[in-house]
Structures are given as structure tokens and as C-alpha cells.
Image (tube, rainbow, N blue to C red; front, side, top):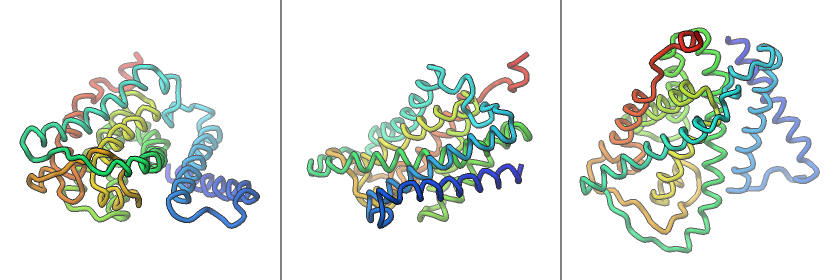
Length: 275
């Protein structure tokens, strides 16, 4: 398994190098500075990971794309609709609870900031695609073949949480929320056997929260300002609402994500379901 993951990383690095050479005539001075450069870099990494996934499956798994979540069920309507539906519930329910408890409220902000929404959503799309491929693609697929399902979902969620801890400043409850969300995304991947469904779920979890959050939070997470005409203002206990990290970093989000993960968890093993 370690060798296959090392090969995946190697193929991705080679793909990034080749893509860089191919883009040299169009970008002789390298990637543009600022947001545009960050968006382009994230999409290049995502494309490189897609190429690497295809390469390792063809080389080691005889073209069985089920192991990376691109099998025959990957684009089933139920998976492609169910993934984002679960994500929207995971995003909306903590907000609804916070508003119902008077721990949050919506306030209007300068509509000029709406123009930044496209850039913000582009970064969210690229960043979540990279995370989905890195943590819930070949990595989780290999684990599902070799270890119990609980471990196959838990390990990528833990690795993703460590990555977030390294990349961003989180409180312990914020990391708990990240871990719980990772368990939800891994459960979607396991239940649907669809990597696109897991990515759409993460998109649906992330975009509403980031869009409604403060400019400071969007800047902290993605390096850009928020672009919404409505802003979610939190006033309740930081333990529940996430405080400066926003609703996504609070206990409400952690609890909802964990409950949803348990609700969609497959009741039968894959071997049993195929008999």
C-alpha cells in the first residue's frame, strides 16, 4: 500500500512538472500573483492528482476504477444528488440551530462584495477537489480493501485533520469539527462508492458556510475576502458556534456531521451486499 501511494505522489509530481512546461508559452513569467495564481495552482494540482489516479489504477489495479471511486456507481443519480443534499443538511442545520437559539443572526453587508463571490467559490471548488482526491480517492479506496470500514474512513479523516492543523490555526473544538466533517465525507464515499459524490458533498458543506461567514474567516481559510450580500453574525458560546473560526469550527457542526455520518453508514459490508 505504501508503495502504491508513493507511486501516486510520484505520478502527481511528474504531471505537475509536465503541466508547467505545457503552460510555459502562455505563462512565460510563471503563475500570476495573488488570487488568480492561487486558483490556477489549485486546479493544476487537482488535474495532476486526477492524472496520477488514472495512472496508478491502470498500472496496479488493471483499470478497476472502483478503487478510486470512479466505478460504475460513481455517477449514479442517487449518488450525485445525495452527496450534495447531505452536505447542504450538514451546512444548514448547525446554522438553523444557532439562529433558533439566538446564537446567530443574519446581517446585510456591502453588496459590492458580491463581486468577489466568483473568485471565492472558484477557490473553494479547487481546494475541496484537491482534498477529496488526496484523502478520499486512492488512499481511502486502498484502505477499504485491506482494513475494516471504520478504519478506512477514520484514517483519511485523521490525516485531513492533521493537514488542517498544519495549514491553519484551529482550536481543539475546531479540529474536532474538521474530524467529524471528514468522517461524514468518508462515509459518503464509502456508502456511494463515488468520489464525485464525496466532492459534491464537501462543496455543499463548505460554500454556504464560507459565503455567509465574515471576510476575516474567508481570508483565514482561503486567502480572499468573502463575497456575500448577507453575513452570518455569531454571538453565542464559542464552543458551540466556533467563534472566530465561524460556525464550521464549532460543536454544533461537529455534532451534526457525526450524526449524519452515523445515519448514512452502510449496514452491510460490501462483500455481503454483493452476495
